[in-house]
Amino acid sequence: MTQRLSKPLKKYFYLFIIILASVFIVLFLPDQIIHHKTCNKLYQSASEIPKNKVGLLLGTSKYIRKGEINLFYKNRIEATLILFNHQKIDYILISGDNGLIEYNEPMTIKNDLVKAGIPEERIFLDYAGFRTWDSMIRAKKVFGETQLTIISQKFQNERAIFIGRVQNMDVVGFNAQDVPTSYGLKTMVREKMARIKLFIDILINKKPKYLGNTIHIG
Image (tube, rainbow, N blue to C red; front, side, top):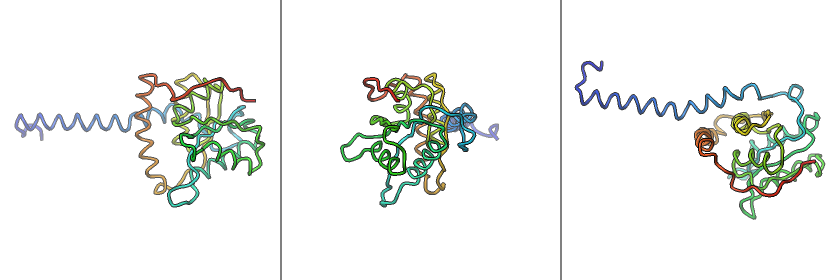
């Protein structure tokens, strides 16, 4: 087909192919690398997952815009209760966004876990987990934990585990129940972008927004 094209058209045709290939690499290669490097560290069953002292629960908002309970939130709470009740974690580190006075992910999650029966003294809060990147690095540098069980949905667990590998941490992930594709479509699109940004963060050795004094868990 290309033999019949004029030289200017050939030039644009090859340029189009290069752009298309570049877009494919940027969008899909990070996703495949992260999946390949983390798939053997993910667990669905509490009976199979190894025990760790600390479970790192990655925060999210409790409510969606319609005022309904966020299914991502609900399922992470349930996954945390399963791990704790099966004695697969002794302490829970909740890492989330507390960037505004009226918005406090860690405290909201803590209150719901305590209501569900988890002793308050077994829960620690990280108020500066604005991103998964920050949550993982702060777990190591602020809370001194390098061996963790990450609690979130599979897509975020994969990224968190990958960050842990880069930071020389020994981490596994317990997958909270996922949500219907239509429900979490925007989240999945954001996840694609977050995975691309992750490689940029690694390349520039991105620092978390805040660090702080060391906090000992347990």
